[in-house]
Every structure is written in C-alpha cells, then in structure tokens.
Amino acid sequence: METALPVTVSIFFAVAIYLMLSKHIIRILLGVAIFGNAVNLSIFTAGRVTREVPPIIPVELMTPDLPTANPLPQALILTAIVISFSFFAFLLVLAFRSYQELGSDDTDSMRVAEPEGEDLPPLGY
Image (tube, rainbow, N blue to C red; front, top):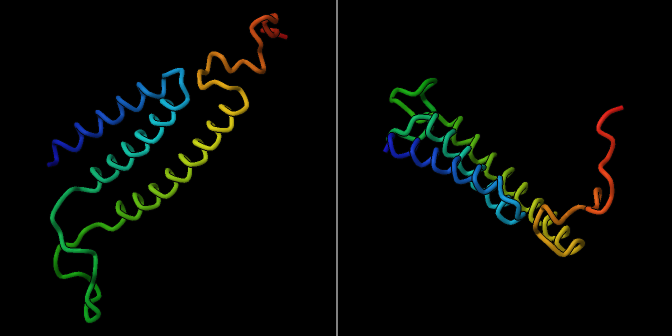
C-alpha cells in the first residue's frame, strides 16, 4: 500500500501536467482537477498510512495511552478538497463564459488582445 500510493501520485502529477500543457481549455481544467487530487494524495501519503485508532482521547485521560492517528493530514485534505472544488467550479464557469464569448475553446484562437493581422506589440522600451 505504501509503495502503490507514491506511484499513483506520480502518475496523477504526470497526467495533470500533460493535460495542463494542452491547447484546449477543457483539457486544462481536467488537468487542474487531477493536479488537486494528486496534491491531496501526496499529503495523505506524507501523513503515514497506518491502521491506527482514531484521534479520540477518553475524557479521563490527558494524553492518549495508545498510538493514535494524526488528524492534521486529514484536516488539511478536507480543507483542500473544498478549496479545489470551488476553484474548479470557478474555472469551469470562466471557461464556459469564454466559450460563449469567443466561440472556441482553443487557446490559439483566443487572440482578442493580439489579433493575428496586427503588428506585434513593442518588445522593449
């Protein structure tokens, strides 16, 4: 299990970077979503994958008498899931709006600021 997770994380990172280098916005968005999941899995892997009891301490004890799970990676991952989902929803709406406005999801054809027929902007001052 501990060797399968880093391999899975590296595959997720590779696929995410490959998709984010694409010209189409939908593939870029899928790459961002997979990249977020890769980061979450890497945090989960760094938090040690063991079968421990939950981080609940009985009322009569000040410290746990048994080994317990570390709640920090779980809290970080839950927060990251919420943030990455809201970020993905924002990017999805932004991509849909740009598709409505420009009629294409190809980043090469989205040349509103620099149309193809015009001269290049000044390169130096």
